[in-house]
Image (cartoon, rainbow, N blue to C red; front, side, top):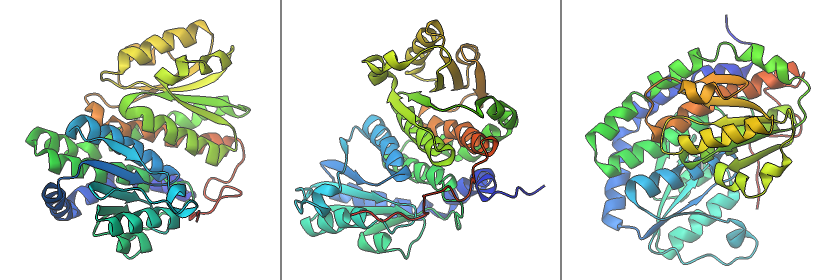
Length: 348
């Protein structure tokens, strides 16, 4: 039965979208990778807003860990409000935007290109102003995303970044793992069939926090944004490390915490934090592929086994998307057109 909600359909489209992206963008990615090697950037700067900024956080970790490149996230106001463009002449400057109509991100790209930087954009519209502003462009090829809250364009952004890093890394096993991603995402969707029932528990929830670390720092931020957008409730997003430095004091009995804890080098730290949250009597919703982590939560959102840590954010976000949508539904909120939001937000 076809869902009456665009967002639900778009969540379900993600395996097919990613499969298509991995097929159609292979050659463009090779061209971009060749240009990057020839340019030999000293560092990377990424400009983005909103959900795309969370994709930039993923790129910061993936490029840093796998390529050993320093990656900074741009502050577009420096360009647009203070008119003080930075010296990025030796940088690869990337602009990320679903619509390609983010004017402040485009200004960062325009200034970077004028300074001699190598510029790349990633959008869902190859004819958009941002796509046309850069020397190179990677298209997400998601088809139209109708729901205001981004789902398939977000996972496509992460996948495009992963595809580029795989090409730059030149590791056959790394690239082969990426080809398995659509199946992992399909499995993650299948494992979430119980989420509509879980969401009923949070009908009257008024606050929540999200926690991640490393690669899934981006997931904590993205899921907080989805819940804020769809449920109209305050959500705090933290790195596991930052959370211990003071914000943990906010936790009292029953405080809902969405904890992203897949396998990898950060999992022991996340499990230790789960034990601390258990002692504080927080109510933990755990996204993980291991039983040890899932057993420490009141609510378990399982992931498929054997996902490489560097790909886990593209899968871990899936049950969070489903939870955010279903929480909004039980709260009686419109999930495709949240009040006060537009699909394209123009900032200066």
